[in-house]
Length: 640
Image (cartoon, rainbow, N blue to C red):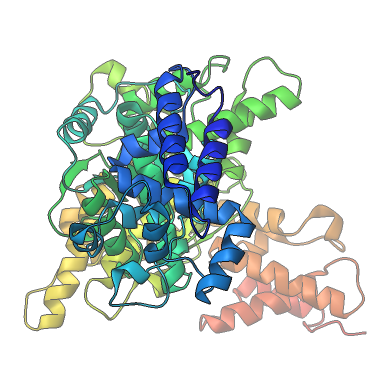
C-alpha cells in the first residue's frame, strides 16, 4: 500500500474514519479496516514527509486510545455536520470525552481502567483545553484541542499564542565571553533540566544568546503581559506554550512577572510535562524555590567591549567605540544604528559622529533620573586653566578605558568617577554637562527626591535601577548635591541610623563597581564618607572666579548686539558673584529691557538687576559701581 504524499491526505482519511464511526449503527468491519489502512499508509510514508498525527503521538508518547481521542477532537472541530449531529443527539453545545470514547469504541473499546486513567491529569489533558466550568466527572470534560495541537495537526504550523514568541537561533558571531556560563547551561540542559534555570544578568548581557547556543530554538513568554488576561485565558496561553515547547523540543524562556502567580503556574506545567524552563532574572531577590542559577558578569571588561565592537563593526574609523558602560545588546544596537546612519549618508566607514548620534537615539525608559541637556563644551566655559585641564583629563580617561588593558595596567573597573566640589553656582553641573557633550553622551541627572525612600530596602532598589538606566541609555551619571546620598556613616544609636548606614554602604559598593562615567557635585566635600573619597579617581575643586574671569563672564552673558552704549564691564566685575549669579543678573536686566520695549540693555538696567541680586546675598553695590550709578542719574526699571 502506498504511503501518504502530504499531511493533508492523512488528515482527510481520519475525517472519513470518524464520519463512519459517527453513524447511528457504524459498520464495525469497515471501520476497523479503515483504521488498518491508515496505519499501513502511515508506515509506508517516506521519511521526507512529516505526518502530524504520528509526530504528535511520538512527541507526547500517546497511546492508541489517546491519539484517537485527539483525532476525534480535531475532526469534530473541522466537520460542522458531525458537530450538529452531536448537538441534536445529546442536546449539548460542546463534545465531551464521553462522546469521544463512544465514537472510538468500535475500534478501541473502553474498559474499567480507561475511566481510572482519564480521571487524572495525564498527557491527554495537556492537549485539550480546560473548561471554565469545573466538573467532578472527568469524562464530561470538553473534547476541544488547544491552539498549539490544532495548528500542528492541521498543517504542522505554529499557533499564534498571545504573549508568546518563537525565537530561532540567531545568525550572529559568537564571542567566547561567557564560556563558563555556557558550559553551565549545557550541563543543565543535557542532564534533563529537572529544575528551572535562572540566568542572572542585566538586560542585554547575552542571556538569550547563551540559550540559543545550547538549545537552538526558544519559546519566549511575556508573563507580565499574560497576567493581564482572565484566569481561564492565562491557563490556555500557558498550556499552549508548554505544548509548543514539547512539539519543538525547545525550552520555555521568560522573565519573572511582578506578582509571581503566572510564573508559578508556568513552573507547575513545565515540571508536570517535562519541559525545560529558564527565567531571565536581574536580581537575586527574583530567585525562588529549588533551582539552578547561572550568573553572568554585571559588567564587561574594557577588553570585552573592544572585542564586541570590532566583531560588530568592520568598517569603523579609529577611535569610534562608544564611551561609557555598555552591555552586549547595547553595543550591538548602537553598532547596527551607526552602520545605518553611515550608509544613508553615503559613507563607506562609520564615523565617530555616527556613533554619537546612534548612542543618543538608542535609549530606554528613564526611572529615578532626568536628562539634563546643555550644549556647552569645556572650551566654552570660563574656568581657570587647571580646572579645564582636569575636565579634559576626565574625558580622556573615559575614552581610553577600552585601551588600558593593552598597557597591562591594574584597574578595579573600567569606569571613571569624579567629584566636583565648591561654592554654589560656580559651574559644577555645567562642567558635568560639558563632559557629557565632549563624550557625545547624554547627561542623566539623578533625582534624589525619587531615590530616597522611607521604607527599608527601597532606596537600594531605586539606586540599582538608576545605575541600570544609566547603562541602558549610555549616559554620564550625575549626582547633584551628592552629600545627601554619600554622607558620612554615623555611630549606631537608633534603628534608623543602622539602615541609613546600609544604604550608604550599598551606594559606595555600587559606585565603585559602576563601569561608566559617574560625577558627583557637592558644596561641602567634608560631608562625604572618607571610605568613599579614597575610591574617587578625580577630585576637582571649583572656586569663585577672580575679577579677570568675572569680566569675561559678564561679556559672555551680555551679547554684543544687545548692549546699549558702553557697559562698564571692568566695574561690574568688582562685584564678587558666581557665574550662575552673573547670568541671573543678565537675565533680569534683559527682562527689564523687554518690559520697557527696548531692544538692548542699558547700564542702568544692569545695575538695577545687580543690586537686586546683591541684596539677596545681604550685600550692597561696590563703591565704584555706586559712584557710577550716581553719575548716571540713579538706577531704575525702564517701563513703557
